[in-house]
Length: 213
Ligand code: B12
Image 1 (tube, rainbow, N blue to C red):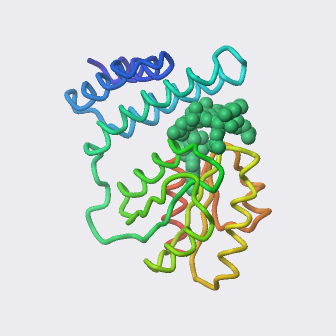
Image 2: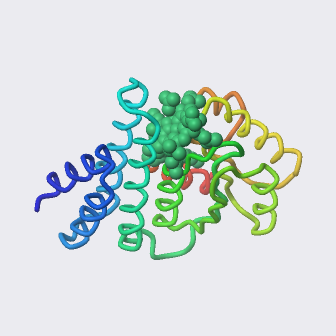
């Protein structure tokens, strides 16, 4: 089966919220020797974006979004062990990542965490709804190079500015990177974070740049 056909099926499986179809596409991706990262980014994630648009236009209700998100999570769980490691050499840096307090959206954050691992970072994923103190404590404990935070809601954006403040207050030497659907470069500049990444590829590129700088 061609890559295009698999990607089309991946998009459709998420839009339909069809868990079995999503898992089957993941297994077919592996059987066909395709790159799981491409199927996640160009297929599953695109399907989730379409679900978001349908939800925004009030064409579907929240339960459908939940089912679609579950289908995507199940497929990613199958694909993750097959993602080829790009960096076989030395560790590039250590990252603490999480979704800020009050926000339970974690699919995109999970993709970013996976990509950072693939590209040679050691990643400590604190999950979702993470208090600011937990980011700071973990960063201190492991002597992190980078704290990466995600948020998808305008109501929880303030968590990223509070985190930025807390990093300064704590005096730890750590870079900060922010992302998530509610975030943009303007917000990054406003709160003084070191980098903003629009998607997982940009996140890895910017994280690498921060380690060099
Ligand atoms: C799936 C989803 C859910 C799922 C989440 C499942 C899960 N485990 O994550 C469920 C159904 C649980 C959910 C719940 C809610 N949701 Co919701 N949800 C979505 C939806 C449709 C898609 C999000 C998604 O997964 N996209 C796919 C991923 C791959 O994309 P992504 O997250 O943007 O991540 C990419 C980039 O942003 C970036 N990135 C992400 N994180 C990071 C971090 C860093 C450091 C970097 C560099 C980059 C980066 O890279 C990622 C990969 O490319 C969005 C709509 C949308 N347009 O975003 C609404 C949306 C985010 N939800 C919304 C809302 C309001 C809610 C609820 C409050 C609904 C309710 N009334 O109960 C609750 C939230 C409860 C809470 N306290 O958090 C709103 C937020 C509105 C706003 N602007 O504030 C949105 C925008 C929908 C809308 N238009 O109303 N939701």
